Image 1 (cartoon, rainbow, N blue to C red):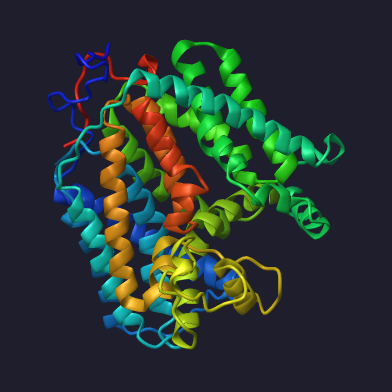
Image 2: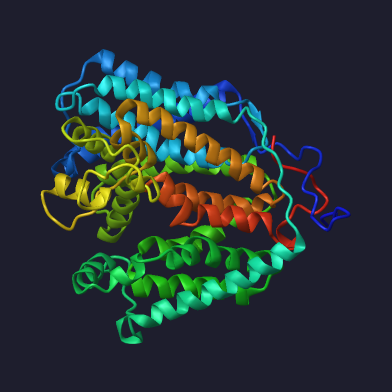
Length: 459
């Protein structure tokens, strides 16, 4: 299934595999303009009406400002290659729809209270354009020895064991199964009691939530071993009960749905899945907002998805830009390691500092994304360009290290990482949320995860 070299390392170099992404300029234009138009309508009719107190103000804007926003929303995507075998392009589309397009429109409507919003719109577009253009670069393969595979598998077993010990530290009596809608209240209670700090003190819970448990589910689906599927669901449910992390509860079914959509190893379906899924969510929200007699639970679910994965990201761009106007840049001192040579200007971590500024209340964590926390707050407009280059390099490395992984295995895991990246720092995602761990897992993956005798998917 995967030929070995004479020195024992697995040879991951081969001829180019199937095309993962293929679309004409017209197709890209239609998908992006659809998301842009619907988010514009969503902002005017939903976000500005129901969430104005959180910063979604509907301020007067010029026709020129609207035209510029639509131009900037579309142009970076047109720099993508028409065909590509690099599968991290899926994460690019996730970030484009969840971060970039909402940010452009939130900056537009913040024009009356934010100086230089047009400059930020343009530079942000340049940054995403750099990331889009980088997919024209060819990824390279990585070789791993069999010994490394066994060492890594042993490490994963130890990781799961440590995670179980960590959960037991808070006591079985503190694990409580609540509904999706009651989780926020319970989370506040546990945070006040100091229970959640146990989980935020290390990477183990996040690694198991976003990498180990999803891989267990995928193995079960591939081999039709439903014990592994059930184990993955049980792990996610237990983590939700212990930490009230809603995304942990949603990860398991999301992995199953994504795997079934991509099970025929057709990546082009995955990109359409992200594009038209965003359009569908916006459309349903608009119809629900205009309709009468919509069940309350349905509105809460829509509100959760729209606000957390589209609204907050755009708003955080404006929030970080406003804060950076009157405060010192961090110059990436919020990243561990850099803080040793650059003084960190605040007393708390960036999300808590911005949360206090945003909500005028101590103990609130503000939403974020790489171009806000690692870009605007780090070094202003120059920071946006720097973090765009960092993101492009991370995508290239990811494609190089996942070169032989089956598409139906990789796509669900990349989608999880892309969604998480849309609400966190790039450096937090790499270490805390398991992006780097996923890349290492891909390098030492067992035969069941590989494309058989097919060749590299990078190119």
